[in-house]
Length: 360
Ligand SMILES: *Cc1c(COP(=O)(O)O)cnc(C)c1O
Image: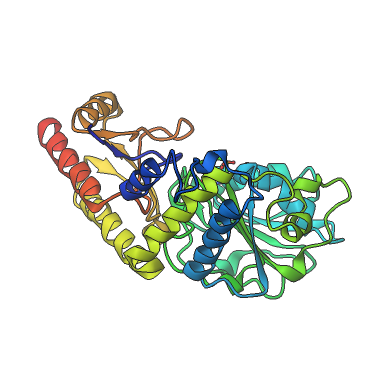
């Protein structure tokens, strides 16, 4: 068996030990005589798996007691609609910060439910930086302020938590959740699809302050009403049980690595290998402003686009896959989430150097 270094933006690489545990428990979970996939979500075995996953997530992120942790479905794109349906709370508008492809999608969807005020946008700069907080034109009467904490396609990441006063801050953290410590109390709501840093696709994490739920629009589907989901411990409908089990194993793995501060140090060291090299060469370039470069998704371009295919082919021959940039921006993108070992990034930089030496 040969495992590759998988630089996919998502679904993405998982820690190898998690996959090994899942494989060893596939047919018989802890003497139950069945796979987790075959368990009733209301049985005591699965309830214990769900409770442990929630407890570990709360511990890792130090989630305050007045926040609900919800395991949902529909992905972050589903949440783009579910958030306004739940969070408008009698108000008619919401503020959104436009930092790239994923914010644009959130804005477009929210416009079906409310008036969207784009309070700041990185568009004029080609989405290569986060607009400074001092330039945001927030509306004091907005229901919430929405940000995307890491733009997975553009590679632009917030390295600060914006202060938005008493209006709840809502963040799509799909691609950097659990990559570093976060002060959850500064947010009204955090959401994210699982398939970048948490586990298999099909599971969506929502962490929401209790006092903000219970006022969903009447049109909200029951399965997407945060209050209904919370009141039923994420089991109003059948949750994505196997994905929750894998997420629980990933949470355990993160804890064993030393938790989120260890994860952050590891991620900084990994990203530095790549960004430090990019700073020394003009053969490759990274468009993103230095102070908002993502530690999770590193976009870069070859000076000569005509060499892209040869670069990707050589990478594949060396066991490195999924380096092609998103179709909307082209170039290359290395996604280096928690589960990517530093050896993977070192191998990539070694190949980049070799390729440069051959073609420069
Ligand atoms: C991947 C991603 C999404 C889309 O998630 P789905 O699970 O496909 O709905 C949304 N936002 C961000 C920031 C992402 O990285």
